[in-house]
Image (cartoon, rainbow, N blue to C red; front, side, top):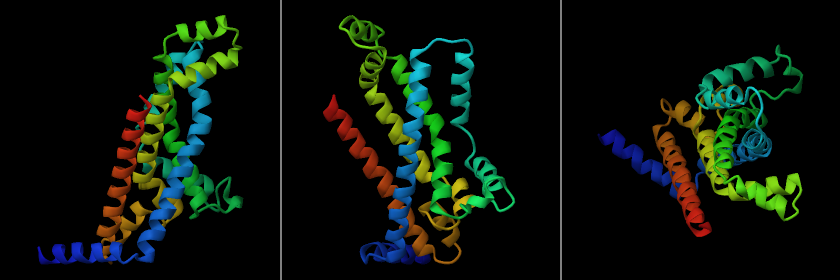
Length: 224
């Protein structure tokens, strides 16, 4: 119990003293997960628009595929990326292993199914009359789609927040292709060497997730 208390005290000392390791790791983690979420949103939203607004054979299968990928183990995706990006892999010449870029790519792939599934559900929930009304008023097909996207913005926003949470909390991908560079990997690797640092990083990680989700909730309420 004494060791735990001492670890907690030192952890708060590291945070309050502005320890470089704590804050550099935190900023890098925010950058990596934030960038991955933005990338996933940029390519995931058009896919969701297509799935939400179009009817085609096999649509149910495609939606089910993305829904299933939400639960993919991060260590499995991390291993696949390791095999692809390692020196002997097909993309080894890019020399991305153990870099922030590799983790960004991995996390973007990880959260893309979240964006697609949540955004598709939000788009399908929009009243079909919105599209008809927009076209009646002279809107083109793309303008009508944008009108639907605007109505579904709240659901897409939730998808982005959920994706960021998934990205910043994952361990498998970051560990296998990024090494010891983000919050989760440092927490895991420092347990046996500096428990105080692990506790400090855990506190920071929980605080980041809490603050971002509370801020997102406030923004959603104001928008309503």
